[in-house]
Amino acid sequence: MHRFWEKVIKPVITAHQPKSIVEIGSLSGLNTVKLLDYCQHYDAVCHVIDPLPKFEVEWAQLWYGEKFKLYQDLSLNALPQIESYDMILIDGDHNWYTVYHELKQVSEMAEKSGQFPLVLLHDTAWPYGRRDMYYNPETVPEEFRQPCELKGIVPGSSALVEGAFNWMVHNAVHEYGERNGVLTAVEDFMKQSPVPLRLHLLHSNNGLGVLLPEDSPLNPIISFILDTSGF
Image (cartoon, rainbow, N blue to C red; front, side, top):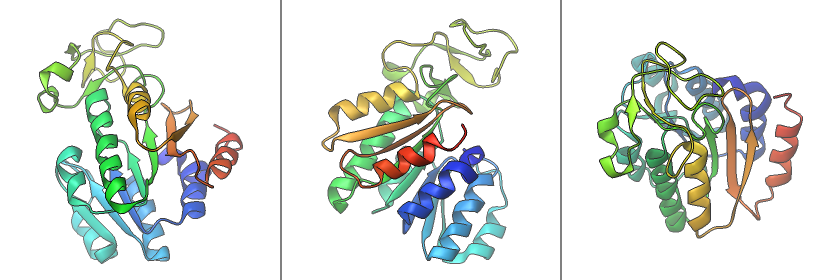
């Protein structure tokens, strides 16, 4: 998601000026550090959720202090621990079950706080917009899990291929279908959301979705930022 920082995320976050941010999936921390820099300048807090962060956690805690809150756990375990937030970036486990239930928990938080947050979601396009991926299949209940294999993905092919893109993770054997992929999860959530929502999409760099209430005054600003981003 860090590839979108300068042209999309930074303008969006500056327009929105959130005071409490959640980041699901930090990986090497390239986006996390940018969020934390924002928090230092705007007196905000960033809650980072990642069971296995791949950046210098102790350094971040020392440098950013109370602006940085880390939850080394799965997102569905950690999210209920955060009382309220006005922006969340979802870039963790790219499968229907996880993303759908992350959004359900976001909605539950919003019902209590009275404010649905600005949501950014990575991987809404190929390869995981319509195909599940599992870092650890056992974290997803069997009834929600697509048949999967440790094989890679190639554009234009539903079938998996030995040694192709992302062969080292568990990819769904087939693309498309019910309960399969990040974008499918977002669409399914929107259908039953108690708050009417609008989804803005970019299709480059594996896709970025921006989700917010239909009546939010940020909608035209988001449209402008995305349309002029060059992605």
